[in-house]
Image (cartoon, rainbow, N blue to C red):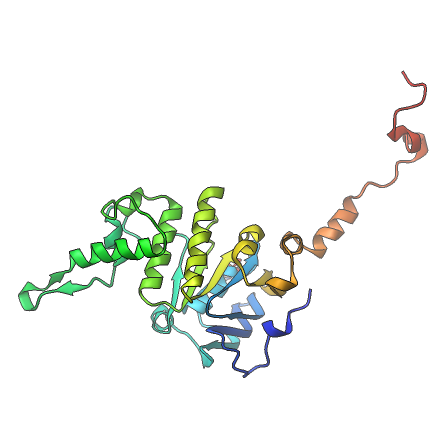
Length: 290
Ligand code: ADP
């Protein structure tokens, strides 16, 4: 299906997007990891990036998260053309990325992980110390605000389920003022129920006004929460849709291989069975048969 006109605005037009990629390409030596990829991330919306293994999803994350700069095309953040060359730069521009293998310290309590690397302090001079009370209360309140009901913010984060840990990471990004939240396959390793819980918090981040990039290979998960869908295939765009322009069946079909699948279907279609091999009437019960 063709890209929706709104999904690929004219270069230079200010679309109101928080992040916008226009014809972005990335090469690793001779390997084309991404070619001419365009997408938009808007406040209060979820842009889903769908693709199979090797489609270029990780490469796309790396470009938006500042790990690897793009080679050609345009990256705009809040309308301003940018080239990110470090994760710090992306963070400073309000882009938070939650990776599948979350960087947590399993034995430390949830509240400690919530503030990891950005611990608030109290007191002055030699009496300066981490503000444990503030951290504990704030982490609990922030998690509750996102609807995350933790039994105990003092428990080591390693005792939480994978889904709960993803939720803590999302709440953390919201608390620290992220404008854009990039989620790397947050439901990939989860069962149905936990996936549902994580998607609920992804939607909560959206409702808090963030622009969300949800990377997934699951069209069902994408369709539940997504406003925009970008399909990648071998590094190139295989589709770009707004929710109103595509239904779940079509998205699933495209994700499953689209036209490739149709061709495969045709190739596998049974040729008619010749008569001498039992074709024709042989499909039904034979009249007067045994
Ligand atoms: P996905 O995350 O969708 O599985 P990737 O972005 O990891 O896809 O990979 C896209 C393509 O780019 C693949 O063909 C992959 O082999 C290639 N690629 C990714 N990273 C590198 C790299 N650092 N060096 C060389 N090739 C890479």
